[in-house]
Amino acid sequence: MVEQVHKPQQQRSREKVARILEVTASLLETTSYEDLGTKLIAAESGVSVGVLYRYFADKEAIVASLVRSWLQLDVQIAERVTTEPLPERSQDLLEKLITAYADRFRKEPGYRRIWYHGPRIASLRADTRRTDREIADRMHWALVRGYAMPDTDESRRRGRLAVEVGSNLLDLAFRDDPMGDTETLADAALMMDRYLFAPPTGSD
Image (cartoon, rainbow, N blue to C red):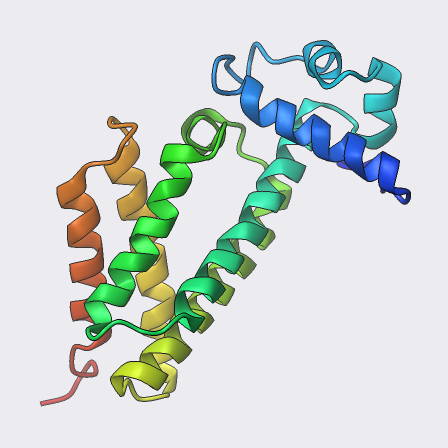
């Protein structure tokens, strides 16, 4: 699938693309992906359909670009949380991370709708895996720096798996509750912490 047809070069063009993405996210709060069309997006964005197609091949391409912007922000969140002064306990750090990502579901326009009801876009799989690795790396170094986690291949492997588990528990917490099930969110940080600091597999 061709996603962005032309990359915006000038500031005015970049502003148009940003507006298209912002409007798409807002529309997804009230409109299903199936009912969302490029004519509606263009009209609400204040651009012609021809201008929209100058930058995006179709609505899936718009959503793919939107999701990529969210993935970039996910990495920025991990960087911010792990470079701030660290809390006393490792579990508290993981709770901060879980809370920051939970706020995406609560506050980011269109985020929850796309997470549960959006298209499964094959071209985003590599971006998602890369994002998860970057989040795991930042979490790993914060745990090494602040909580005496050993810097080993095993601890890195567990960090990547813990991020995957945390993502799935976020999915579970917000599936039926737009504010997130508080017990599931609390358990996510607890489970990740206990797993990350458990003795290595195969140890006595």
